[in-house]
Figure (cartoon, rainbow, N blue to C red):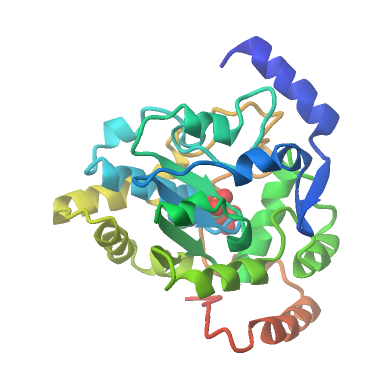
Length: 303
Ligand code: A3P
């Protein structure tokens, strides 16, 4: 990476990295708010594929899977660039690097794109162009734990504070990209109106090949068993942990400090049990019941 640009990025992160703003009452990095009009007016193309998630639901995992599906399992080509380069993150604005919008605009079709936006903030052109979206949802407790460790190591997001503080902030939806509850329910309600495949992280852990096949069918790709096995192997936790194009190790430590917590951290269902206090679990379950009532959306917190 260009050392001069990296130096500027380091300066920028120190200067504004911790600042957040709001869009329609939802917390975002200030740099995203600064170019919100450009993001909302982003022009999708008919053959785009969008991977959408609440943060830490398995975005990178799904990106790698979809990329390999589109490449018919060509592992070498899938390693052409780091995941954050080959898949533009449309609402991110890591000045002085190009914004997600700029990177996507400069990319040839077919494009694979990423977003963490709640459904109501997705640029309308995605719906106008009837773009296929793969939404990955992960149970709230594991998402919370994963996000807490991610905010500790990602220097462009606010420091999460103590686990106790983070627990309350997350439950109140007071973290970047907002409330887990609103996010998963909003996308769930939209899934029949648009071309949205709603996938669960827990299902991917339980039977990755079954879920990869589901995604390839959704994308009209008829893959052989052999190709499906290759994709399964290359996107396993252990393979991705060792893959510098997928594990974010090429980012400098002033952006992602893997010595605090590695990006490929545990990749398990149920790690929340190592973090939640008994009292927190009671508070969480009460709130969960209230917020999820009537949604018909159910998650597995353990397998
Ligand atoms: P943990 O922090 O619980 O380990 P995202 O890409 O949305 O930021 O999500 C990151 C989470 O997905 C991390 O969870 C990471 O370990 C997990 N993950 C990434 N690749 C995975 C894989 N191949 N298998 C299982 N989990 C994976």
